[in-house]
Amino acid sequence: MTIHIKGAKIMAMDATHGSDCFDGDILIEGQRIVAMGAALPEAEADIIIDGHDKLVTPGFVNAHIHTAEALFRGRYENLPLEMWMTLAYFLVGDGQLAPRALYLRTMLVAMDALRNGVTFLADDILEMPLQTMETLGCIYQAYDDAGIRANVSGHVVDRPIADTIPFFGEILPDDLLAQINAGKPPTVDEYVAFAKEAFSLYHGRTDGRLRFMVAPSGPQRCTVELMQAADELAQANGTAFHTHILETKVQAVSGQEFYGKTLVQYMHDLGLLNRGTTIAHGVWVTDADIALLGEAKCSVVHNSISNLKLSSGIAPIRKLIDAGVNVAIGTDGVSTGDTPRLFDAMRAAAHLHNITTPDYDAWLTAHEVMHAATMGGAYSALLEDDIGSLEVGKKADLVIMDLRNANFVPLNEPRNHIVYSENGSSVETVIVDGEIVLRDGLLTKIDEEALLDEFRELAPELLAKHAPQEEQNQVFIPYLQEVYKRCAAVDLGINRYGSDMPKWP
Ligand SMILES: [Zn+2]
View 1 (spheres, protein in one colour):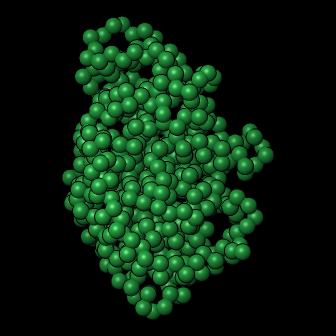
View 2 (tube, helix red, strand yellow):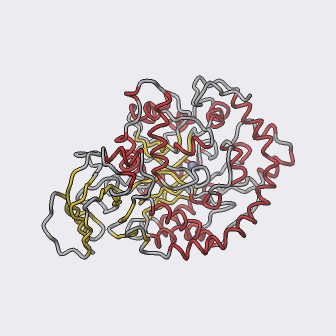
View 3 (tube, rainbow, N blue to C red):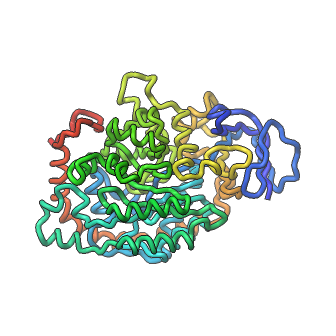
């Protein structure tokens, strides 16, 4: 299949042009871009797309999402991470979804992502109560069918839950402690066997469009042995090591309480910071942490909306960029971010840091946000040679936006319109791996309406099943409040809140 996009405005995000636009054509053959430039000769293309009044950009890379939360969009508000997690992911209980529900849950997000120009998801799947090869297979099937590109994880926790949150174990009554620690985490051998099978079944599926990544939940939630095994698997398979570090102040206190050092320093001392390491959040990193992340060429995924919603804090993105850390952008889970739409997280990221300093030279630029949302994400996914920019030889993952949409009228600086104004409504055509997956606003590979109807019909039953789990887990909330209060009172020498209010009132 060949596709010729003629006479469009192109924002290539490559090293030469960055986010500066130029007018030209793009020729796609098979999965890749084979030619780009001003007025390419008429080719015998199967499909010709008139690029007049159109803006073409690389597909947007959502570098951190949990689609397992898709049932809980719009369900929770005004809860910090630890309390929200207890209700959404339930510490105790059994709410395993059936394969069709898992498929639809994933498809719902994939459709929404594509419709909004997101061509890649780094989907960190924490399946409750247990991820199996079958549940993982449902996720891959949905992505295969929708035509999106994704790295999908087996999110893993192998320490007793009460030991992963500071002070929690010591303040919980015995019966609740026993309940919460009753779950049987996988052994390192079981985890390795699982990951190896996932690599052999799913990694590289659909001509490399779908991949598997390792995702130990976080250094306070996993044993050293498991993280080291995961790192070895990542290196051996050339895939990302995706983890959560220093999202909240509670996690910052965890480092001091558990290891007597920051969680970044701890990872560094274990030899676990390297080019393939991606850290979701990195909000409560110290200056020394930032230097270590930069030296190791790690990536940090900035989840601006989720960090705002959960009051996790403001990540020091300028300092991270200055230290050479690769910054990507994610929405985080579909409950804490409430959407897989990257435009929202990009806009929030672009504005959030302005309130941290009057020095406007230090504020993020629209170019930096565009870079983080494309090449930054690609680098984090270890796919920078294939996606993230429009270049001859790269995979054809791109978005065509309609410049007649009000978000672009009148047209000033295109990158500013995308970052500060675009909300997804101008996205007209989306191509992934050389295949048109959205054309004139319609998903081409699947019946969106039928899938949405099926999910809407199924959802009440799934939510009814979740409600008692949620109720049962309310019992832990007062103890988590106490943890939260104690951690709020700890002086870490840094403050990532938006005010001088780190103490519980
Ligand atoms: Zn996350």
